[in-house]
Amino acid sequence: MILATVGTQLPFDRLIGALDELAPKLGVKVVAQIGAQGREPVNIEWRRTMEPRQFEALFLEASVIVAHAGIGTVLAAKRHRKPIIIVPRRAAQGEHRNDHQMATARQLGGSPGIYVAHDIDELGGLLSRTDLERPSPEAGRSIGALHSALRNFIQTGVAVS
Image 1: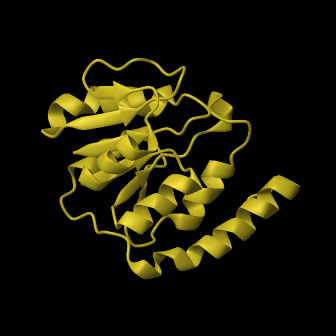
Image 2: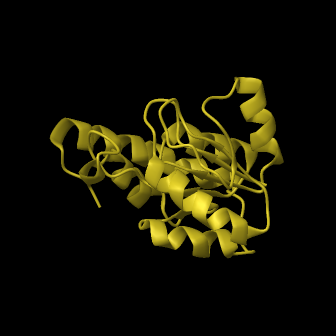
Image 3: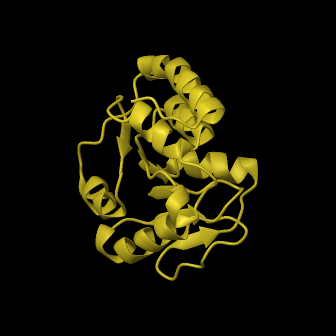
């Protein structure tokens, strides 16, 4: 099962729409938490919000997590040793107020068990892979560097590569 989550603050119709389109070809169940105002998909099971216990149970059942580049979801994937595909929200598309998720994706991309779809068209290829590795316990070492990069971005508006 694939679990998708967009967080609780903002809808992420670009991500949910892509998953909805891909779902019939994936051959596995897709469950998504789409947020309070997100577009309702037709090909995947969805919920606007989830109680923590329900979310935790689905997280444990999932073989892969697909999410916005929210640090809470990335940390949960690491904690549960689930591979995660992150799709950063883009400010230019009205998905967030700034591009801090792009900075998060740049910082974490390439870490064990963390995959980034910088472009929504990359999502299908990543979901079709059978070799997605789980994050290692050491994957959290880059979190401190991520926090520093995010703090810098918020304070200066300049992303550090």
